[in-house]
Length: 309
Image (tube, rainbow, N blue to C red; front, top):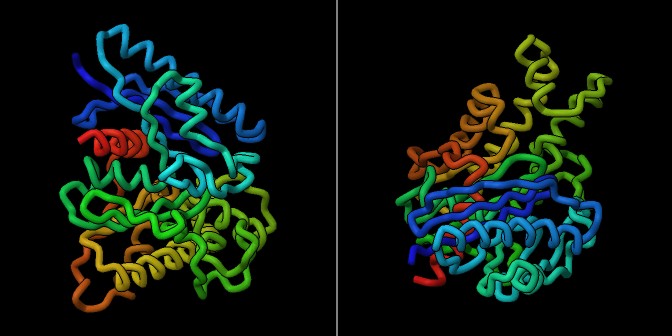
């Protein structure tokens, strides 16, 4: 009997699910809005419903579902599948026993849960831009900024599963800008997508709602929009360069929605990375993520397949 894994990616606005083979082939992708403002019961109900539907699909094809891999927003206790802490994007998500709840509601006995950025990183190191690398530093730049260090195919979680909160390192570019964590002067306050929109709106006295709007103004010659993107890109690049000096990874991979701006963002970001690198790291590859929205699903499935190996 062919075997497969159900994978879930529980994000702040959308929950995605798919079947993933041992070779990493992704099929039957389905999504639903994440009811983040309705609390953990509603979030788990939506996620488990998607998983249960895929269990039925796989069984109807004569395939055995050997586990459920989950990438979720928040700090995850990987030993228990419990959310240790989370922002209010998912209301009251902290404290949720994700593994046990999903197992009970979906009917899938074996469930493995990790942070969604770590799942993205695993996907990219298994089959994406960092495939074959012995070590990778993955950075996700979108609504927030997260990171993951993967060594020999295994995520470094840290002693308390907090490793990867790259958005909350202090950077000079952020000055005293407020951060969503309650602190100030952090990378996320200047380089995340919403932070750049806020910065542009404040200086231009505008009311744009997305980074794409800022990018369009930059393309049209708006110097303030150009400067806003450039500052955010260079702040990120400088921080990545410093982290690379600390970690000495084989490769750096950058994903998330912000790189979608293109060369206007990527070129100053990479220039700032390389300005910080020590001479032995001069040839360090800095690569765009390859798997797109499928990365977290591939990585979540990888959690299960590795555990069964």
